[in-house]
Image 1 (cartoon, rainbow, N blue to C red):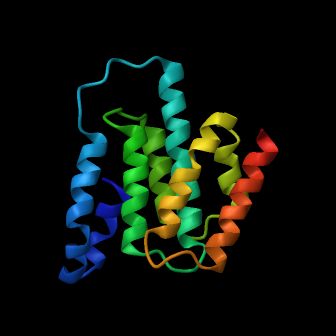
Image 2: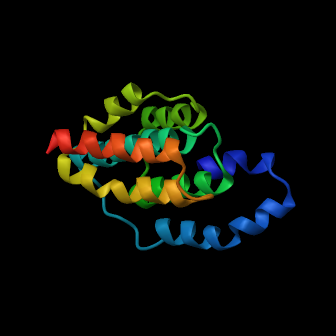
Image 3: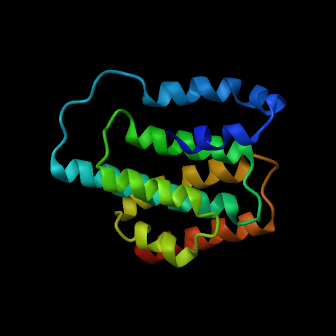
Length: 158
């Protein structure tokens, strides 16, 4: 179950109208041909990217004290586009679930996941950050500070 599905019961019917188009996008992100069996290294890479994306996305979305329904949708889409049809190990799924419930995730916790990624992968994550930031009502000061924090982290790794 994705982050978005877990919170939908908290919203009324009007909010459901917001997500009709996003549901199609989420399905497209995970649909497609079956993937071949992955090596242990490939599975670890996908797991690390999913965890880092989830942690960074939650940090970005929660930085202003409010996580909108649109931000939840973007988090689900970002994680789903990495995961695809891959069956992640149970411990990774549990960790994703823990991250999804931690609205007070700290930058140090996020860095723990980011440190496992290559600089090239980190640079590609800036799109995920941007998606979260503009998902609701534009970029506020807290969100801009997170963008700069992530950019500085990426620069330090290059």
